[in-house]
Image (cartoon, rainbow, N blue to C red):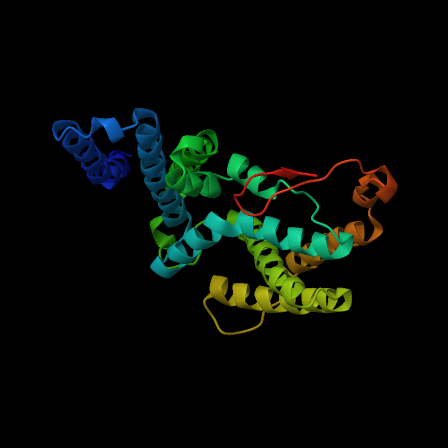
Length: 274
């Protein structure tokens, strides 16, 4: 625990010193007219929290993985997998409903997604939302410490140190991988038949590759075969719900003659009301 804490301090100390030196140079050179403390400290918090987010994610991945390559791969997957799933299903829903299921997707991600809020906080410190990042940092640190204490030396060299995580990790990675690929399929084709066919093919391909990574062998195995079946069932159920409009989105849209005003915006531009 002391070693993990020391590495954490060393990870953020250079950044804190550089930011402090920047503030000192601004003050000593009479540039305080251009210095806005609120935006500066928000930006500093976003940068430091981004480093802590990456560090605690690294601690968690290093605790649950037994090789360097699996640790790096796990860090990449777990950092962006939730956003990939959201983006994939948004694209699919747009094709089924002939409209975006929510015009506030970006606002939702900037409010609840740790990765997006930290990234946006660095670019736009004035609108920095810190709570998702704090929750993620504390959660990753706690899970990493728990996994580190559960780890055993004989597990070094395995893709996953904890066998209990194999099924949930496999299911999550399969859903994220298939959703990301369906995003590309939906963007280029938008054809329902292609989406359903590609779902079956992608689940099979992603699962075979994932089993090879977990077993560290180039072979096809039927181990935990129920996981891809359940993932396929979940995806097909989601597609069926969209196709049948079980969420009631189409029924929620007003009829043309009942529309009295329309608001729209492009990118980060202003909202125009017609």
